Length: 357
Image (tube, rainbow, N blue to C red):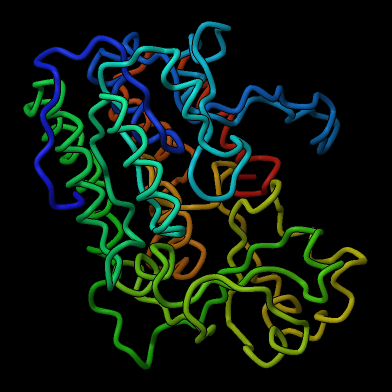
């Protein structure tokens, strides 16, 4: 996806997969996840007792890739770092070389172009072929279709394009269940929404959180598919002040995962006393997305798309039972048994985040 030809092994056996779960979850579906020897893998265990709600402990592993492929926690599968911010650390070329991989698949988020190009050049100089996928934010405007392109490219590497089309069809069918209900919403009927990351660390930096604006896949999905208007005009995602939040005056606030799992009740707590006059807060129009990483660009992105659509336009989605819909999507996508499907459901923390009651 960087526009160059890459010669790769006919049947790669030792793969380093550097992404935030898209590559390894697809490799699971393709039945080749046993080839992963390293990647962007957080080895930090979840702290038990951290998320307790209504007497229930929700401190579980929210990383779907590890639920599907427990071997990612094995000591012989290395964390080699990742590009961009995150829990993986910086890319470690020495660690990658020691793994003796015959292929590295990298998902470029386009957030640090110089560092990424330097890293790719260094890896190729030691004889390891690199296949680059491009994150939706790399394109202007971002589009869901590029995620489908990534899926097809991964399947081409492992010679299973037929399975890629099945994955894409499952995702597109789920997206169509949203767009079929929103496509006729006129501009003057569209709700105004603030997509807001709410880490407590923002308070110490002089703001209240991160606002997502144009150029991000989250806003592209919300505007193009859900047919809601974004109220934050600045490109990218940026620290936002209490004054800016008050001035934005959205109908609805959406909270994604951003440095923790943020339920709607968080905005009622002490750190947010300066924004209590917001109409969305007064009207209880604050909603959370699932406890997956904050970016909505993985195989599970239709889940957050459906949640956002249902909370923004509840009347149009009154017939959708979220818990059942999410369960069925996971089961179809991963062809998972009931026990594994339930583990993934638990990892989304739907009850803790008040997505389902």
